[in-house]
Amino acid sequence: MCGIIGIVGTQPVADRLVDGLRRMEYRGYDSAGICTLHDGQLVRRRAQGKLANLVTEVAANPASGTSGIAHTRWATHGAPTQNNAHPHATGEVALVHNGIIENFRSLRQELEARGRVFESETDTEVVAHLVSEQVEAGKSPQDAVKAVLPQLRGAFALAIAFRQHPDLLIGARLGSPLVVGYGEGETFLGSDALALAPLTQKISYLEEGDWVVITRDGATIYDADNQLVEREITISGASAVAIEKGNYRHFMQKEIFEQPTVVAQTLSSYVRPLEQKVALPQIDFDISAINRVTIVACGTSYYAGMVAKYWFEQFARVPVDIDFASEFRYREPVLEKGGLALFISQSGETADTLAALRHCKAEGQTIAVVVNVPTSSMAREADLLLPTHAGPEIGVASTKAFTCQLAVLAALAAHFAARKGRIDAAEEAEIVRYLLEAPACLNGALQHDDEIAAMAHLIAPARDVLYLGRGPDFPLALEGALKLKEISYIHAEGYAAGEMKHGPIALIDEAVPVIVLAPSGPLFEKTVSNMQEVRARGGQIVLISDAQGLEEAGEGCMATIEMPKVHPLIAPLVYAVPVQLLAYHTACVKGTDVDQPRNLAKSVTVE
Ligand code: HGA
Image 1 (cartoon, rainbow, N blue to C red):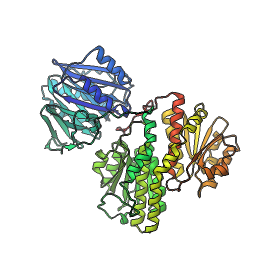
Image 2 (cartoon, rainbow, N blue to C red):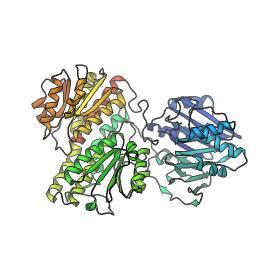
Image 3 (cartoon, rainbow, N blue to C red):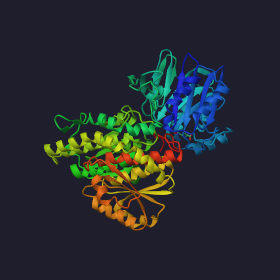
Image 4 (tube, rainbow, N blue to C red):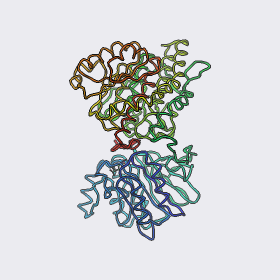
């Protein structure tokens, strides 16, 4: 998703702006641009496509100046062309924007009626014109911004440069993240601390409605009521070292292989092996009084939440509702008093999920979040922060964040169960033992990489692929299908194995590979029956199971993948590996852009 960076500095900024954008490349984008302030001019360079195109443009037409703003754009309004790329500029101001100005149509009509001429199809450009109008009428940058912000509806993080004021930039945030960084005689704006890490570790997180004036001497921050406010300066732990792929071909591959380590790292915060207990961070509310859990998330995090629903209901006997964040607020959900609302997001900034969190907070729910960025908006607004320790995830298709989310959610479900008296000490110890086995089992699953790479050649020619699973492996079928769609662009569907016969079985023919996730265990026989129904109609099966499952049902399959024998509790973590690897290798066979697949963005900060 869009990345923003702004520098008021003492050295030429163009290269540093581009470097900052490079650190945000992993978010996914389709055009990029910079604007520096030099000699009373707004010097703008923009390019469609990858950052390399912007680098070429800047090399051919250098942009001097010691202050400037920069942006990677993931288009929401208007095609990803050079014209629609940010910064957007008028005579007096240039600005970059992350978010959506929802009332841009009416604002644009009014501006056009006043004679303003637009050069792009974006929602963003209205803000440039509105601020410019104020400046042209003689207002200071501060007064211009103060007059415009209340006119904007929707979500925004903005960085604004003023032609006649090369020594300052103004930033503002509502709904989209923005941080201020403090350097030596230089001050910065950025979408997150990671983007600013090579420039400074000293960071203030702007709060909702804040706007800020940055100069070389520091920052002056105002809240939504234009009152001067102080925002704490924290020392960010984000590493300045560029994250490298090492010996791996793609970040996604590296992240798949990191899973045993990062799941172990995550579990070390949630279980006490010697006492054989689950251990959560300090909780300031009575967990045993929680009578309902509402889980809200998007994409892969949503599937982690679906798995967690099985665990919460099975172990703690607490009823669980789960919803896509983008649907949740708009269906007028009934939230009973005493409920826990649980939000899952890798970035902790996902706009739909954050909006749902705020809705639940206003409705008096206790808020818990599972996030990979402990300084994110969701983390800061939660009553209970449950961080995953996956480390930065660069591949747009989430892998290690998913298995770490599952590890945290399993521990949380067990903790609930223990506090509610649904499991005794021996059962809790057993759950802890299974969880601690997960990293080794993930390692076992990764040993099948070569086999799966070979198998990908069978999947790559397919136009459609089906994934089947039952119980907690049903969300894994959905996740497998999502991974394949995201990075190989093959149409795929996940289905509850038993649901096939109620419709989708009509799709089966020899050209549709069907991937069946069926660890041996209580649900195995039923899943295998559904698999036989598919096979009887010519379906080509890839069965993913353990040695016992393959022995019983592997005959006649197009291919099989053997997983270690694991307890059903940790099966969703372990079975995530083969579906990730299958999607990864299929995408490699197809030659797609694995780490930055077309049209996708990471950290989706627009609704
Ligand atoms: N709406 C703006 C910015 C989009 C955005 O924030 N993407 O992450 C545009 O379409 O240019």
